[in-house]
Amino acid sequence: MKRAGKRIIGIGIFHTFLYGYLVPFVIYPRFGDNGLTFAIIVAVIVSIAVLGKMLVKVLVGDIPELDDYQKTLLEKFNALIDIRASKKVDAKAAVNMISDISQCIKMFFSSEERLLKQKGYPDFEPHSKAHRQFIKSTIALNRDVTADIDNLTMDIIIELRDWFLEHIETNDSLYVPFVRIHQYIEDNKKKS
Image (cartoon, rainbow, N blue to C red; front, side):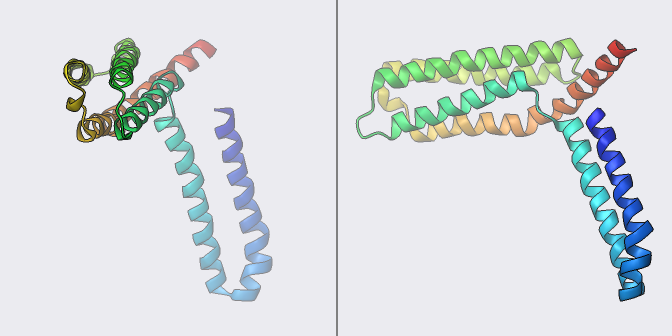
């Protein structure tokens, strides 16, 4: 919150400079009422932008311990796409990558669920149910590809990757403000 305080003070200084010097001595004498209106609009836009950015950072900020899993999984999905796109598909590499994705997804979902359960997230059950369904999909894909490499199609890979991205953008983005607020409360309790 120290950064937020500095930004708020910065906004105050900006407004003081704008209304104490620029408007009465520079803008208004040169442009009249149009200049005053312009200065007010600029000040309001700057304030909204800065405060909005601060609010978004507090409510939708990153959760580093989970972000690493997300990045790793996306890299693995991209690697699987590269494996499938090659002229001669390496069946062993494909099966190993699917196993890696499956293991990484289990660790990611486990960490995420542990955090959500600890914070008392109200939509925990439907969220974890979606996780279980996705894990079943990766296990089924692993089994199918182990049986026959031709079962690994680009459509299946992209469907799994897109499900994962959609899950992050919709479901996961819903709990981030909840977790951030709880973390903020816990941090302030520790300071008191």
